[in-house]
Amino acid sequence: MKIVHLDCGRSMRGGQWQVLFLHEGLLRAGCDSRLLAPASSPLLLEARARGLPAEVLRLASLRHLADAADLVHAHDARAHTLAALAAHRRLVVARRVAFPIARTPWSRWKQRRVRHWIAVSQYVRSVLLDAGIEASRISVVHDGVPLLPLSTREGGAIAPAGADPMKGEELLRQAEAEGGFRARRCTDLRAGLRDASLLIYLSRLEGLGSGALLAMSAAVPVVASRTGGLPEAVVHGQTGLLVENSPRAVAEAVGSLLSDRDLAARMGLAGRRRVEQRFTLDELVHRTLDVYHEVLSCSK
Image (tube, rainbow, N blue to C red; front, side, top):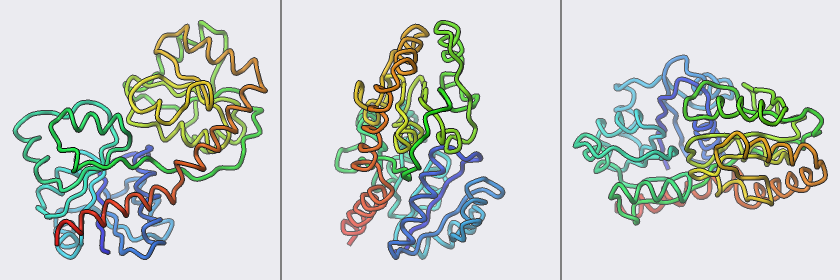
């Protein structure tokens, strides 16, 4: 099976890590998987550093590779646009974001070019359904994350660093003032999870929350916003606490887990088991391959 992956991201966020994990897993499974990404993008550089097939995304290279591919898999909105313009008849589009789909004529034209959609969560699936996309053209494939070493839980609370307005940095600052705690901001979440006792994962709207899953894989409990697909990742009262986006709610949840180390440890281990059961890299690859086989069988 020949697959061409397109990703136009200029930073290495959760979506780009998922593309990398999938690309790597498909190659191990014996697929002819190729990745196209912008020049100097962190995804392209990381793929090349790992010795994975990866080329600079140009329209000419896209057309050349797409012509020989069994299907094209676009992983973000701009990649969807480029793939639609390339007019490959078996286009799969990943939808990781939870905000509504535009209903402009241009957006509807792009949607009609998609053979099948992969939603990162049931919540995102509902967004696609609301946009008028048929249920038969949507499959849910959750993110997969590597199993990290268990955290030593000696480093206190951490939170992802970043200036994304959809994330909850301002809310976190207000919660810190309310609760009298301080969370380390981590640009490298994997490194921060080596000793974290708690991950604070706040967002206005989230497709699923691969960062929360990564914390769970290290047996770190999560305090997360009760929004979008996050309740599909974090089970309230079992693997962490889901909260409304208010400073007091966040502060109380953080305080309860920082003050009760035994409860935090139990939730962390429950989160680890949940990742092992539902959010592994193997599951990501196998379920994506199921989608590919379905698309190819319907094209014959």
